[in-house]
Structures are given as structure tokens and as C-alpha cells.
Amino acid sequence: MKTDIEIAESITPQNIREIAKKLSIAEEDLFCYGNYIAKVKPKNSAEKGKLVLVTAINPTPQGEGKTTVAIGLADGLSKIGVKTALALREPSLGPVFGVKGGAAGGGYSQVYPMAEINLHFTGDLHAITAANNLLAAMVDNHIFQGNVLGIDPNNIVFKRCLDVNDRVLRDTYIQSTPQQSHKADFVITAASEIMAIFCLARNTDDLISRLGNILVAYTFDGRPIYAKQLKAESAMAILLKDAFKPNLVQTLEGTPAFIHGGPFANVAHGCNSIQATYTAMSYADFTVTEAGFGADLGAEKFLDIKCREAGIAPNVVVLVASIRALKLNGGMEKEQLAEPGEEYLLKGCENLEGHIENLKKFGVPVIVALNRFGTDTTEEMLIVKQLCDALGVKFSVCDSFEKGGWGAAALAKEVKALAEENPEPKINYLYDLQDDFKDKITKIAVDYYGASKVEFSKQAIKRLKQVEKLIEGLPVCMAKTQYSFSDDPALLGRPTDFVFHISDIEYRAGAKFVVVISKSILLMFGLPKVPNACKMTIDSKGRIEGLY
Image 1 (cartoon, rainbow, N blue to C red):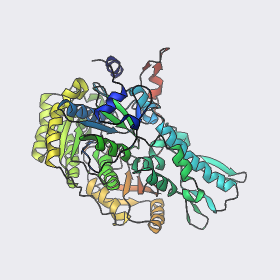
Image 2: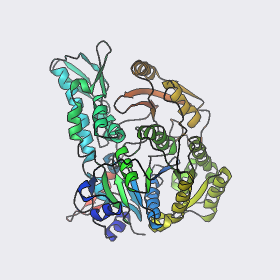
Image 3: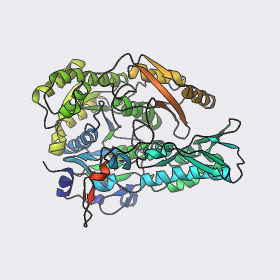
């Protein structure tokens, strides 16, 4: 089979104006970045199309093709005559140059132009980084210029950010005055509060309000200081003015795709922007969106955080699984995943079963999409189907990687039928917003992840007490490993009787949620021994190899 780049170069893309016409987007609402990329004036119609959420089981380190399936499903819906749009996240440069490489689908199920999407795109992540670091600079400048607000330099909670993996920035110190140095840690841009605000703000007024409400520090006597007290919110909003418009591109088969915002699901809420989702649902009859990593992370946050904020609910949830990921969760060595191993597959199906049972708690229809790999056997696929039949959920094999939209047509028909059976979707949230924070955390860790109990560090207890004095009624955003239901990436499958450890808690007042950081999770990642960046080349004609 051709490589991803060879496949992408073999198609003739449509002009972005033609893609916009498929959704009846007016010319004056389109802001073109060349022939194949545009920004779109946001739209939020009272009448919206149906919404399909694509999520997954716990993945292998290489990912399990959730984005590939989401793109294939959108193309499949288009193939069967449904007016469809995608709503996906923007890739971060961290994974692109780190471990995974590009993140925009694969095979015949890609978005175009993949290189631009994976790199600078329309500059959204750079704008978010700049807005974030402007606020950080204004905090330190205020201290340098006399510190009228009485900010304690040792109690600044707002962090700088950068959209590349750079582990040395996790623990840094700066001088705010010639006599005073203090910690000034960095997070990756996808984990920043500005990214979360960018993706959760419903309109420009909401964006400005949220930016002003960012908690930046505490004073020497323990009073909170917010960005609006530094008069920083308007300047940040100005930097985000153009970035805040959703980006429009296309799949290889010409299905419109909105790609906007990129929070990670293991350290942030893992969903594309509300603006893009609103816009897609306002123009299309069906919108296919995704939430990052497994359903224990992205789907829970999509349903408990994003849907609450946006006032939306999915008509159907598609749970992506793969034979190789199930085998890995059953204890098979990752170097042997292409080999037969029925006993490992059966054991690994416990992970799939756990995700199905969890999603059912939200009261949404679920269908399992098996992302087919070339090494999968008929017998292996039958084992997964039989489990789904026993659990009372639909099952479909997705072959969009090799066959594009037609390879997902059967899945598309099943999804369309399920969505039409659920025209007015509702969500049974895991917790009530008025529950206290410890109860919310416990309900997720115990009832959803399967932990026996939750343990809080001294730092987490200290921060929780600070948060409880300031606010109540907010959702919680769990930061944990994507590889396990637990906080230990080595506990694969469906672990039980484990303790879930909370190391720290951060109040994201602008994002309007509380981040709960579990043991060993990092908000700034490092590069591997051989970064993906080392495998890339570019020739004199600008042709890139190794990006995907």
C-alpha cells in the first residue's frame, strides 16, 4: 500500500470555496488562506444537526486510529447521501516532533492538506502561546514595577507555555526583580488554560470574560489575583481575534472538516472548540467529532465538561477498538501484536467491556467500530463481535484506512440509524455540579475508572482547601495516563482494587473547571531518545518525508 504522503499527493483536492459551498457557507463568511484552507465566521443556529462522538478504548502508544475512523465515518456518511461535516482538534507540534508524528488520519482516511495541518496551519496554537505568555509577562512586570497588588512571587499559579516538548522547562526559575527570583514553570500549549478557554468559550464576549477570570497568583496575605486586575484580558483577546474563527479544510474525499483547538485529553479536556462544533452542527445534518485518547479520558470530559458548557449532547457514541490494542491490554508484548493470540484477545476484551459499561452510564447509544488492520483475522473479529452482541451494543468493522469512505459505509448506515432513533439526546452526567469536589473526584475514580479508593497528597489537600474557599459548582478535569483506567500506565486491561493517587489540584477559573492531577502525570513532556524530528527530511521543492 502507498504511504500516507503518497496517497495525499495522489488526489486532486477541491478549492476550499467549493468545500464551503457543500455546507452553503456564504462567500462573505469565508476567509481564505490560499486554495485549500479557510477560516469561517462562527455560526450558532438554534436548529442544529445531529452529533456523533467518536472515542476509543485505551490505546497503544501508536494510537488506535480514532481519528482515522472519525474521518472515514464522515466520508462514509457522505457516501450514503448525508450532508456531513467533521469537527476535529488541531495537532500539537509536541507529538508531531516527539513520539507519534502527524495526527490527521491515515491511509485513504485523511484530512488535507496534512502537512500544513500538522505544522503551523493558520497559526492558532502560536496565537494561544503568545496570549498565554503575554499574561505571564504582565504578572512579572507588575511585580517589577512596584507590585501594587501585593502578588507573592512564590505563589504565582499561572504558567508559561510552549508548543514543543522541552522537559528542561518543567522546573525553571526567573528573576522578577534584581533581588527576587521565583519559579516560572512551563506547560505544553495544549495543556494551558488559554487553550482550554479558547475551546470552551461560546462567543467573543465569553472569551474575554473567561480570560479576565484567569487566576494568576495569590497575594502575600492569601487573596486571589485574577488577569482582569492586571487589565490583561482585552490584549489577550486581540491576539486571539483571528485564531478564534474555526478552520475549514477537507478530507481526501472532499468532506468538509472543521479543525480548531487542540487540548490534550490526558492533561486537559481533549475536545475541539465549541465554536467549531456549533458551526459544523449549524451547517451540516450530521457532525462527526472526536475526544482524545480513550473513553476514560476524552469521552468523559466531552460529556461531563464540554456538553454541559455548550448545551449539546451526542445522538450516538462510536467506540473505536482494534485487535492489536485489545491484545496489548490482554498482556501480549507490543512486538508480537501482529501475531495470533486468542487468549490475549479474550483477556483484553475486558478493557472494551469496561468502556462499554462506562459509556452506558451516560445514557447514550453506543456502537463499537473495529478499526481493521491487515493482520486481523476473521476469527479475531468474530470474538469482538460476540462480546458486543452479549453486551447488547451494535458492532461494525471499519476499513476506511484502505478503502476510504466506502470502507466505513456499513458503519455510517448503523450510526445514521442509531442517531435517528435518538433524535433528542440527553446525558446522565456522572456527578452533579453541586457535589463537593472530593465527591466528584471519587465518583470518577471509583465508579468510572474502577478504583477502590482515592488518596490525596498533602499538596492536593492544600490546593483543594484553597479552591473550596473560592468556588463551587464546577466540573473536574482529570489529568492521568491514557494507557490505563488507573493512574499507572503499566496497569493495562481492566484493573480492579487499585488506589487512585491525586498529587495536585489546579483551579482554572477562566476555563471554569478544576484540574485534578494524578500521580506521575506531566504537563510538559520530553522528547524520546530518538525523536520523530530526527526522521524527517525536506527537499528543495518543499516535499516533506517522515512527518506522518
